[in-house]
Each structure stands twice: as C-alpha cells, then as structure tokens.
Length: 371
Image (cartoon, rainbow, N blue to C red; front, side, top):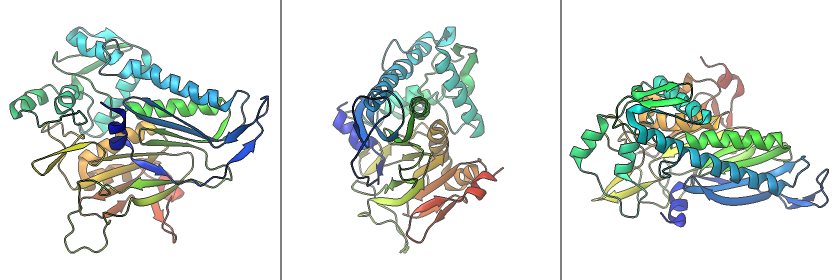
C-alpha cells in the first residue's frame, strides 16, 4: 500500500494551533531549539506526527520525538498482522496450541476482552480473517464472496480467546486476531507517558488521526482540535430530508473541540472505504453479518483521558449506533462523544457544551458524575 494513499484515508483531524515560532532556551542543553518542534514518520501503516510545544527536560527535544518513533516501531513488531514474526502473527499461527507472548501484548488482549464484554460483543478483535478478506485499503478492493463471509463469521467471537498470564490460546483454530481497533490508542498512551517522564509539558501526539494532547498550549490555553466533516471532499453525501440544520458538504470540519490533556479519536465511514456499484463499503465491520456496519452513523468521536479507551469506544459506539452508543457513552465516566448521523446532524453526549463562538468544551461536573 502506498503511503500517500494511506495518508489520504487515515488522516481524521486537523489541529488548529496558531503558535508563533519562538526560541526557547532549554535547561541543561548547549543550544537552543525552536518550538513548536514537529516531526513526522510512518508506522502502523499510517502517518505519525509528534509535536512538542513546551519542554523542560535535559535532552534534546528532537531526541525525545525520535525515541517515540522508535517505540512505535517496537510495538509494531509486536502487534502487526502482516509481520510473520510478530506476537499477533505467532498467536494466529499457533491456533489452538497457544503460545507465550510479551506481557504487553497479553495485557492489550485482556483489555480488548474487557471492551467486548462491556459492549456485549459489538467490539471484537477476533475479526482478523474478515479484515483480510475485505482489505478495504488494498489497491484493488472487492466485495468478498458471501459464502466465504458467512464461513468466516462462524469463527468470530471474543470468547474464543483464552489468556493465562502471558500465554494466549485461540479455542477455535480458524479464529484470527486483529488488534487494529485498539492498538494505536494503546501506543499513543505509552508515548505520552514517556514524553511526560522526559520533561515534555505541552505537546500533541497524532497517531494516524488518534489525537492525544499533553497539557494545553504553552500559554495555558486549551488546544483546539477540529473534527473532520465525514461528508467533505469524498463520495459520501448526507441524506437530508427537509432538514436545514445539517453539515454542508463544503464545510471541512463539523466542530472544534477545546481540550487539554485529553484524547480525541474518531471512527467514521469516510476514513477507509471503497465504492462499488454506487455503494460505499467502509472498514468498520459488523461481526454479526461480516459486512461493513450499516446504521444511522457517519462518524463517532470520543473524548477521553485514555487514547486506548477512546480507540476501542469509538469503534464500539459506531457499531452500536446512535441510540445504544450514546447510552453507553453517557454511562462511561470522564468520556464524551460527538456522533454525526448520515442525515448530517450532530449529536453530543451530555457532558459537552457549545460556547457562543461555536467551540465545544467539556462540562467538567457532568462528565465526572456519570455512573
């Protein structure tokens, strides 16, 4: 897959930060570095951009970012489904025999099972065979044979996973794991922890559209994160039924979020899809049918403290649909969401509030008092 094509599909957010370039003397360093300092790399089949706005560590800030890229490669070698020597590939190849893996991998698998239980199976990482079959971002994606899809869904089910310490076994020999719906969030959280430990006071991690902020802007203001309009500059159009209050196709962003120290993750039909016979086939799969989810949603954005949680919950809420997905988020502490339906309407969870200038903020009391 060409990198420029992946960038086209996977970039979900634009960060609205107008920060003047200024020279900041770093304590313990022999030279000055200019902030914000931003570097981009490629890993997990997506574009990664890390930006530091304020730094009080002793090493060069650029070295911190490069180390983050090294951590991304380290985790990619564990979680990749295409690298034959990755831990996930070893689990898939071992089938019912099981195998020992790095504790990091088993921990993320256990987390995925937790989200599967929370969503009553809507979230499920045992879709590896289905994901390979659809290959939505491939060079020439096609609709798989219906018989093969029906056969594949027989082997989907999180209850097929058995985790004992660091040994992972698949009870069904035809089950395959794919942790793509949670692993980027996990890695983003790890990068944030590392950066903070090295003295980063303000920054943004953009891991293929999974946005994670460290603090706010250097002047104590929040970061302003734009949520992409799912109907902008693509083949997807809102189904407007006499409704004037909807997102226009030429509006690039739905909303702007004011956030500090938060994760912002979106799942949407516009991110990765192909069109066949005037029908859109996107990458978010319904494990009960084996086909892309077909409901009232165009996108779901989760605002949370943890990027791993945001990653899993954005997929979960999307699969569940507006009503059930919103109920789930409104019961989840310190977690908010913006749902965009196919008719172009925007729906916000009860802890979000829109200001007079149009930006959306988190109403702290409401968000923290959920069940």
